[in-house]
Image (cartoon, rainbow, N blue to C red; front, side, top):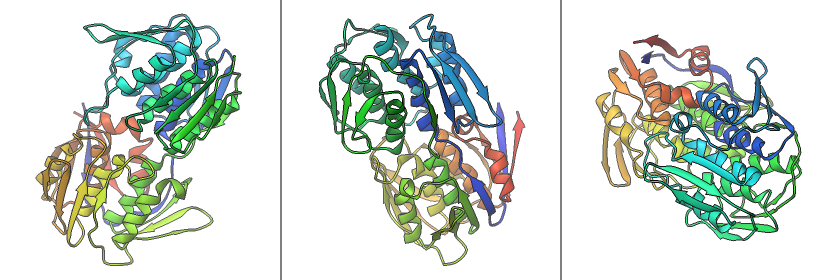
Length: 421
């Protein structure tokens, strides 16, 4: 079991380039199952989640070639050998469920276990099943959690999502792309990653309109062809480095960032006194210009404040003047990092969906656990400003979602090393 050793680092300064979005490349990779032809994907981050999904696709018969030096991946699904996803890989990552729709649309069947992933609360796959059933799929779930989806024909229809689930929206889009007729998704997720997936499928010959709004229209086509596509920058990684500049009172130039994708993060950091502006090279975030003060945040589906940034932002709020209130509305179990931050000297109280942070507390290093991907990033950020040494365990969560995590922070002056236990 590897660990991160983090030491107080002073203001982080320099520049960093944001990698391709993890939450975008995973559904795009799954969507390569929709065609016999070769697909070329650029800006693919070197992440464990990507490696797991590539292994899963390879087990189905997809030919995968990766060039880590130029972040390019080639996928050819022309010779599928099975539509049964291996349990050991599916259990490792919740995004494995994203192969369900493409396999069903392409082969008429998919057998897959209920997936694993970060323990941040209920993320019911029932919305996925509801959407696929509406399109004509039969779905049976065994007592040991094996899902078998079959269909004779997929027929377009109107589907209303009870919650704008990103994964369910993605699975329905990929299934409906090859269905007969028109599918309309109402109350659809609006994340930029949804738009990226739709753009990829449209390049393959798909007919998808309205991605990025709450109503998406998919006209099914008989077949799709290969294409080349570049993945959008990772807005959550960008937000993490924005907060890194703020919490360390540093100054970071962030390259390869889409400002529209991080609007709520910009707004909240500015409320705290962080200076943010655009240049020809990218976004400059400075936490060393003004005294920093508290603010309140409430997580919401996009375009609201992202739940994935809640824990890093909370770590930052422990270091500013005043009381802050955080309300988590997306995942009910996403406060596990509070205990870890409090062990470092933070003063945070939680009650249900609400967390109250008393700011300006001096943090001190100790041994903490990365309870999930984003919580792990939050603890590393806290470690950069804590007195002494912070030892972060369970870092496999962090390495699932951040490319070159140590290298990027070290280049900014962050004192962080990886050690094997």
